[in-house]
Amino acid sequence: KNQVEQSPQSLIILEGKNCTLQCNYTVSPFSNLRWYKQDTGRGPVSLTIMTFSENTKSNGRYTATLDADTKQSSLHITASQLSDSASYICVVANSGYALNFGKGTSLLVTP
Amino acid sequence: NAGVTQTPKFQVLKTGQSMTLQCAQDMNHNSMYWYRQDPGMGLRLIYYSASEGTTDKGEVPNGYNVSRLNKREFSLRLESAAPSQTSVYFCASTEGGVLYGYTFGSGTRLTVV
Image (cartoon, chains in turn cyan, purple):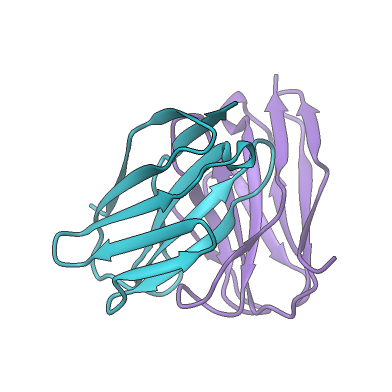
């Protein structure tokens, strides 16, 4: 069964600090891995998309890594801001039209 | 602004009532999707339309029907709403399948009492 597991479930950090979110998956066949940011009451917004051959991809203060051998990914947020408070969702695509969503990590950045 | 527009944003239904959730995209995307998001769970695919004129079941299709009205519009219908259908519903679109980025609407929060 295709699964996407994220940790931690929730996280609280101080503004300006860095943090790393984790994603482990058992999805086959693998097409790509995405990270989305979902603000409260809004739809998910794409941060990064990585294919099998990509190890790292950045989008501003967000950097995603992918280890396809161990089936692990991480999302690193640098110099956090209050606006980074949101749910971060790891999504692994296999083939066709199938996306496998993780449950998300809820991040709260406090002043 | 270009993107995916969903209506309504909020809706309360009584058990047994019917309603249609509307979705429209203006990016000329071929594929459109309906997902539901429940607390403590990842988004789950209800139905999708790979291209105009086609629709297919996703992971949780029971109790729902869809219509791909044209390339822009994809509607989701609940014929006889049940409390288990209380959820947040998201419409999404993409140029094709999973090789492309998805654009999501802002969601419809549905409560069935």
